[in-house]
Length: 138
Image 1 (tube, rainbow, N blue to C red):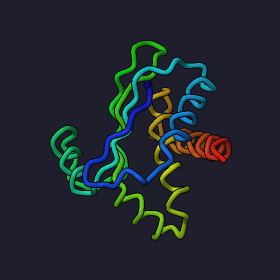
Image 2: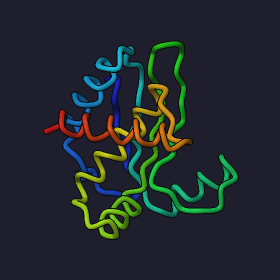
Image 3: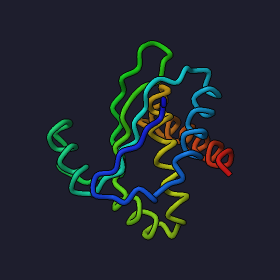
């Protein structure tokens, strides 16, 4: 399967895997890309912190790290998502946990599709696309 899931210290019931697979696939096709192999790894804060520190030399917690393995327009990569951080962010922002989790997933997919969020304009476009694809999920 092009989209697969792993769970590191997190119970598998966190998402509807079949629905997320279909949603991610449709989103990639909508971006006029070809789906390759994508692994979504749900993990704890500590697990992702260690990856962030070791692989990126960043000494802080984050909700997602995306590793891009694309070959031309074939979208492949690993999305490491801290379920703990997503839950904390949702609570802090007074958002629904599942909605925030979907936002983080599609955020990573959009990065794989070539979008960035370094500037205000890029960040605005990413948010707009996240909102669009979250709407497509439901």
